[in-house]
Amino acid sequence: MASDSSVICASFNQDNSYFAVATKDGFKIFDASNGRLSYERITGAFSIVEMLFSSNLVAIVGAGEQPFLSPRRLCMFNTVTGVPLRELNFLTSILAVRINRKRLVVVLQDKTYIYDFNSMTILDVIDTVPNTKGLCAFAPNSEGCYLALPASTTKGSALIYNTMKLQSFCQIDAHRSPLVAIVFSSSGMYLATASEQGTIIRVHLVSQATQSYSFRRGAYSSTIYSLSFGPSMELPDVLVAASSSGSLHIFFLGSMIDHRTRRSNTLLGSVIPDSINEALEPAYHHVIHDVVPVGVKSTLLIHSVDKSLSATNVGSLRASIFVITYNGYFREYNLKTTKLNGSVWSLEREFNLIDTIDERDHTD
Image (cartoon, rainbow, N blue to C red; front, side, top):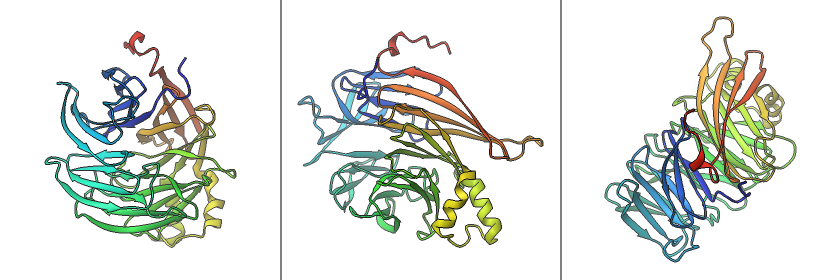
């Protein structure tokens, strides 16, 4: 049985077709559609593995448990040839890496480096507030390749940076407490945030930093480990949050914003005070309990969202949610909703990422 700390890091690629997990022994890349092991490298502990879409290139950073896997060295690695293509060395540990075909972003504790991905030329260095957990969000498919970083250590503010124009875009003051989770929608139009308090999730329209929607996760504090929007390039229909309580929280953005639009007769309308926001939230909030053991970290992704075209079930929605738990499991949940705000969920797939992968029957 996998231990609570089997997985050091987990990430999905930019088009959600593959995911990677790293352990004390090495890293593995899986096909998200069927769970098949696509690549495995057993050389020691890695703290970061970031894929470049479905290509053979991955950015890897060692966890420092072996001398040759320094946490201060970033390696661009070819999984076909097994050869490092380029290495970048830094004075302090690398806390996060984000890439697409145009930009490479390297996050350190108090600096963030922006590189041209193809030439590996450094383009800019952003001085940041102390960012000990390497918190960041990247919108690799957006026109500006937006990057979000914490802007304060005492409150929940986020700096939005355009990595194509190499300039700050705006600052979003999202919460009273420091940020613990941030994620962009696929288009970069929306940013979801959660603070250390963990009771409220907010969704912000990036182009109008003062406009946001609030969703209450719960009345008691909980650590938000991961946030994910639905894959729509326009207004995502769904936002999902994974918390230390072990539950998944699903918020229906489309329904909520439609409701607000009817009230205000504008696209986003006037900002409604939080007290009113929270009174509206229960109709747009569904919970799947006991998805992960309490306190076990997880990374999640909304893989797909389908709206019903049936004349008898207009307004229903089906979402496929992938969850990687840091005690070493992959789970896929299907969630179905109805126009009456009811929901039914089912566990479609589950397998062990650590102990049984080489023994699994891949005929599913």
